[in-house]
Each structure stands twice: as structure tokens, then as C-alpha cells.
Length: 261
Ligand SMILES: Cc1cc2nc3c(=O)[nH]c(=O)nc-3n(C[C@H](O)[C@H](O)[C@H](O)COP(=O)(O)O)c2cc1C
Image (cartoon, rainbow, N blue to C red; front, side, top):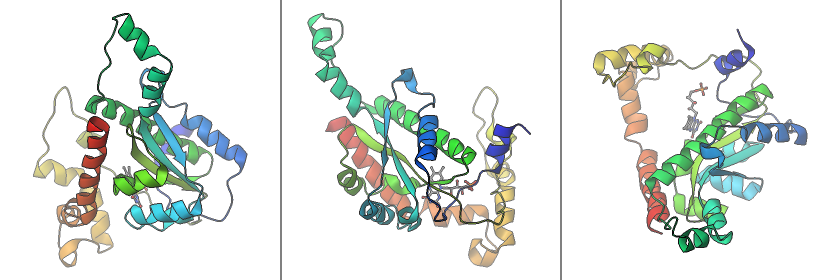
């Protein structure tokens, strides 16, 4: 198999890291590969906060649904959707004043489209980082919970109005030496649709997630004493969880600050 495909197919999330330090050369290679990601209009509508301060890592571990591995990770990156830097640049460079004076463009309020595009940029860079890390022998794990507790995360990281957390990654050399099985995936034909949306229902969903259900059944981790389905599992553990409620509250606050100030 092609080397890059091999890398993609053997990657898995790594949640515990060895004590081996990451050299400055490796870190630089990771950063250079990260910023090579495609970006809308080549504007790099994102910034990345490298969290080095141990106290901040520990605080983030708590704020992100209490995941202690965050505090133990050698590298912690928070990817921000960042329009603030461009707003500053437009204003401080005189671009806004010149366009207004020349009657070429009126200044406009930022909206949800700006958020959407900046989030895409940030997340695409994050996935480049995941693949680059793998190539460098580093393991990584996304931390979706970085979108919780927005007010505190914003204070902790000094965020501004047009900056919101898009994704978070932790990296380090994997602690486990034993090979761990890949997690299952939906078959491609259950994900890809032709020309229009084909709404999946029970039959399609059961088929698409059969491997997931089987893997959980095998280790006895389905609800109702392992007699439940994968739907029961995700409904109880994810869909109706307290963290999901907090993500929705927190995201409403961050979007509101961006749009309304
Ligand atoms: C958006 C996103 C958020 C995630 N958040 C977390 C998280 O907070 N904690 C965690 O341990 N894993 C997290 N993960 C990792 C997933 O659990 C993992 O990718 C999934 O179970 C598949 O396993 P694999 O990456 O090993 O193939 C996240 C992954 C993504 C893409």
C-alpha cells in the first residue's frame, strides 16, 4: 500500500504518552506541515495556541470534561477559528478607511458564514497535524470538549471577540508498545451518496454500524446488560449526556459573542 495510505489506515487515537521529549526539530516539522494545510483564500483564518504552562494544561484538563491525559500530554494545541487578526489588519492598515473613502465597499458585521469558514480552516489544519504527527512517529488525540465552558476557556487563553476554539489536539510519543486494534468504521457505501441526500433509516444505520455494535457486544459494553443496541449505547452515553448539553450552551455563548459582541 502507498505509504501515506498506510499511515492513514494504521493511525489510531493515542491517549497515553511516554516520557520521551519531543525535539525542537520534530516540533518544527509538525508546525510546518500543519500550516501547509489548504486554507480558504490562502488567508489562514485560524491561529493555534500551544499550551506550555502546566497550570493551564491542568485547568484545561478539568474544563474539557475532566480528561487528565491533557495535563500529561507533551504537546497541547488549541486550534482557533480566528477572524480577529484580519479585522485588526483591515482596520489598522487603513484598508477599511480607504475602501469607505473610495466608495468601494462598506464595512460589514461579521456573521455565521465567517464563523463557518474560519472553523473549516482551523479544523483542516488540525487534521493535517494529525497525519503529520503520525508520519513523525507521534500519537495524537482530538479533544472535542474544548468547546465546553467557553467563558473560562476564553479567559484562560485570552481569546478575543472573533476567536473561538475550533478543535484541540494533544500529541506525544505513544506509551503503548503493543499493537492495539483499529476502531471500526462505517463502510464507504454507507457514507457516500450519489447526486442527492439519501436519508438513512433503521435498516441502513444498523448495517452501517454493524461492526461498531459487534465490537461492543464482544467486550460486553452495550447497555441493558449487553442486550442493547448501538443506538442505546450512543443515545445514553453521548446524545443525552451532560457534556453534550454543556457543548450546546457554551457554543451558543461563543457564537453570540462573535455575532453580537
Ligand atoms: C471532533 C472529535 C472530538 C474528539 N474528542 C475526544 C475527546 O474529548 N476525548 C477522547 O478521548 N477522544 C476524543 N476523540 C477521539 C475519538 O474518540 C476517536 O477518533 C474515535 O473513537 C475513533 O478512534 P480512532 O481515532 O482511534 O480511530 C475525538 C475525535 C474527534 C474527531
